[in-house]
Figure 1 (cartoon, one colour):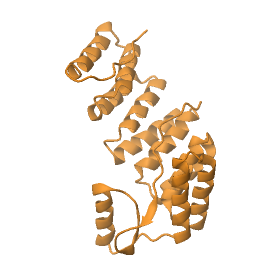
Figure 2: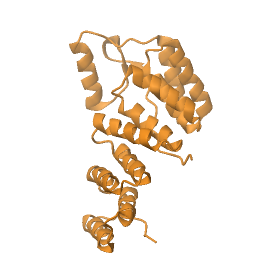
Figure 3: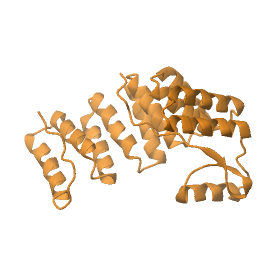
Figure 4: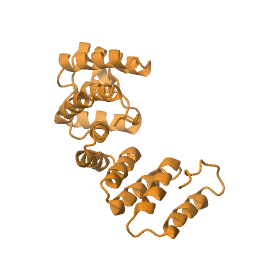
Length: 230
C-alpha cells in the first residue's frame, strides 16, 4: 500500500560547460562527470527538445503539477530514448501518482541505459515495496547502496524490507548503517529500537542500550527523541 515515500526528486538537464549537454549535477560530482566525459573524448549529447521537455517537467514537479510533469517527462523520453534522466524523472512522477506498474517500467528503462544510477534503483525499490514486492525491493535498495554507500534512505528501506521479511538480524544491521551516516535521524533510531524489540534474541536491555546511545549522542545538543515504544 502507498504510504507517501520520500522519492529522490527529478533532475534537470542543461547545456553546460563548453556547450556540452550534461546532467546538471552541482559540486564535485558534476566536475567528476565532466572530467570522465572529457577523458574518454565523448560528449553526452541529447536532443534539445527532449532536454527542454525534461526541464519543463522538473519545474512542473516543483509546482506540484505532477500529472503535467509526468507528461513532460514521457514526452522527453519519447523524443530522445537515450535520455535516461527523463525516464528516471518519469518514474518518479508515476510513483508519486501511485501508478506503480508504469513507474517500474520507466525506471527499468532508465536502468537499461544507466545501470549505475543509484537514484533509479532507489525509486524502483520504492515502487516495488509499495506493491509489496519485498525481495525485489530489497535487491533494488542494495544495488543503490552498492553504488552510493552513503545513501541513508536506501539503507533505511533495506532495513524496512528485511524487517517485513522477518530477517531482524540484518534489519538491525541496515538501520545501524543508516545511523552511522545520519546519527541524528530520530525516525531511523525509532525503527532500530522497534526492530530490536522483535529480534529473536530480544531482551529489554537491548532497547535500553540503543536509547542510552541515542541520549549519549544528544546530551549536549537538542534533537527530536525517538518515538516511545508501546
